[in-house]
Image 1 (cartoon, helix red, strand yellow):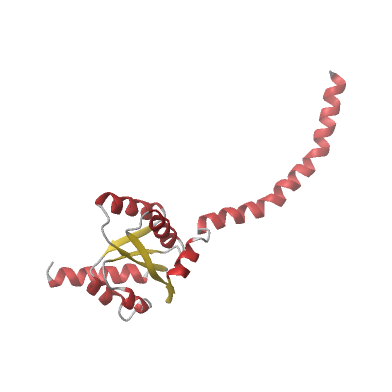
Image 2: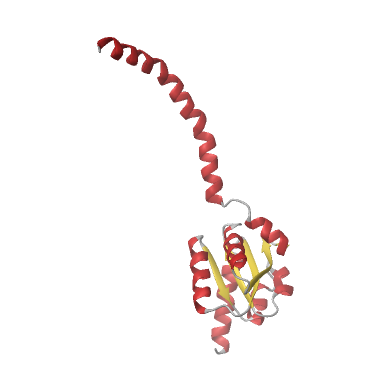
Length: 167
């Protein structure tokens, strides 16, 4: 890879990482192609991305940004997982790491705040935005549903009495 390609890659990664709400750093060693493919698929399923990048290029990409706190974590064989959803990348990576001992979460950066491994794992236990939206809709729609049933019930009772009388 020549200098121009590296500059383009760093520029692209800087843009992607800065537009992400969450960037998770993990150490990996000995992942097979099938395992990496599965992890990438799991990440795509939750609208997150997964990238293996040379540490020097990753350090250049995060330098001078809100992600500057990740620089100390970028040593050894690392991978970056990132997403706009503040939970998706952490949840997918922690779930994969729990099943595979070849990858270990090191830390993350959530909107400029550096998180350690324990905080990332705690973040991964939270429900995703879609789950929270579903719960909110259920909470909002439950009273309306109950009110509709309550208003319908007197008319339904009358209809049952009339049906029984005509039988």
